[in-house]
Image (tube, rainbow, N blue to C red; front, side, top):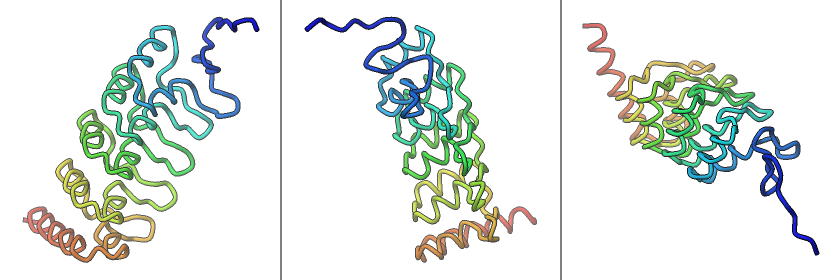
Length: 190
């Protein structure tokens, strides 16, 4: 049996220059998903793009955000990743994915780096605040409100985050959001 040799940019059956035709993602996607920063730096230096989308528009930053790899997200953003790139068809951003997975440090980091807090799902119109409310994630809601999320924002059905909490049977959270809305209204009008 003769040993196989690797040539060019192929290693471990991944091509760093182009998306995998079967999996429709690059090696950088896999490294971002795994949080393998050292390997990502090496292949970046070899010319691999940090922001190549797959056929759904999912980019390595989406993988890092979904899996909570903060160092990887920083590396990708520092090297040109689009912080507000959207995954098709819903338009989910890295922030949306971090909120869905309750990655608090990631959500806070993305917001500090300038992520658009009002990025809404294209189909439902749900913002990250709606998503956190529907999940009953009080900590994420606090983080988003402190960052400036609009507590009065409505989705396509005219529902606010408070309504999303009520619909998902989170009555305590519904009351908290109602109080926050009252507070915001009182001081916005005054």
